[in-house]
Image (cartoon, rainbow, N blue to C red; front, top):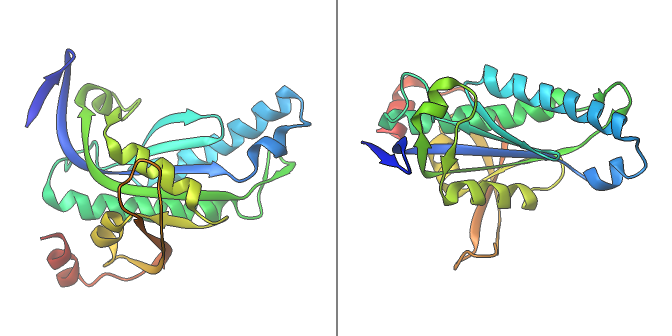
Length: 211
């Protein structure tokens, strides 16, 4: 159902939010000239954005060395029940592909990087006009903060997801369960799953999972 919030056309729907950042970014750039920092960021943002968009996501914002992307917020199937599973699987694949694209790559031709990725799935308010324009997803909800928190708990060069993302995408992604973590602001420990690799999805299983 569409609603108006603060003059904006909005809709409540389930989305998957992805956060990726560079491990040790502060120490990496500490001795760099600001021009070199900018060159590194541009190359990094371009690489991440290319993967996100090819996977059907929307890059919502760049924050220092972090990129936030949203899956399931826009497109012809946005808001449909089966979009939750499709978007979650696409988001996790994108996280794995981002790390694959950057592994061994020298950003701006000189700077090796390592990344970590966190994803969360949940309800959000989506600004329909922003999503339609293709510039920014403009999603609001605790799912955004959860994804950002999980990214901070991810081991280097890994993709970690919340239980909701794992449940929505486990027909398409192989996972390894990790110890729960205590996240500030959360009453109970948060379950974590490490994404290992995509796996073939029988059509019948995919339908049952998303039903």
